[in-house]
Image (cartoon, rainbow, N blue to C red; front, top):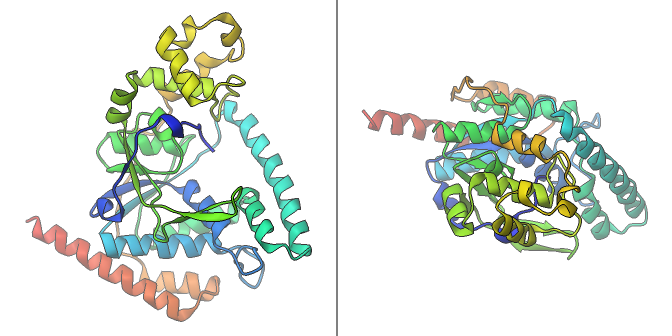
Length: 339
């Protein structure tokens, strides 16, 4: 879920062409949740194979990223969350409760034939299990892209990868990558260009947005540490935040007082563990060494995995394989042209 900073963050629309030729460090679960929420059948339920295993995420991963690879020469590093930090477990438990309630309401509405209302609940009710994680990793590896599991938070590891120059930007919808000091992040990396708004029962048009840490800090007139402190006041995955304090008010407080430490005690008492949370973002636990190998897709393995194991249409998979062959050929040609 991440921290809500949208009203104070400067973004630049760059469109899909702005991603051309770039390597993106993808917050894998962030993408997977999108696919599970949005790729559904006519009754609002996720796509499944005959034994009941969900396949919506595989459809999304296969066709979105192959299109980006062939149409815009993008490459991807998929970063998965590791075991949650102890402070994050409370937030994860809250999310589980929210999803459980949303799932119950989803099936109640389905039984009543209220499919549009049910769909709005489906976005919240998404649950990721071991099958979804492991099948996603297997698909990504077969497509030839690196898979990295972070020590804790995927966005921290992805931000580190970008900081080292191994990727151009973190691809995620959440703002936490900025708090982890990502030089750049891109939001709305999507082919369809729409996002469903459950509260308004409509879709809105989207296009990729670039967020640059240097621009954000300059516009806000604060340091990275102060940006993290603004987030702590609002609330993060690791703390509740201060009741009644949103991004704009938090920014005003930090600008006025300089830091959380100097805030009035009446505010500070609401965030007793702020130093622990500050340390998580300022000194994130990441792997300094990791292996990045972009390989030619395993075309035969992909066909077997998607068609034979997960019951994809043979025709659609042939289209996917052709895209990947062409994308790999373009990458090889670009590499040869460099020499």
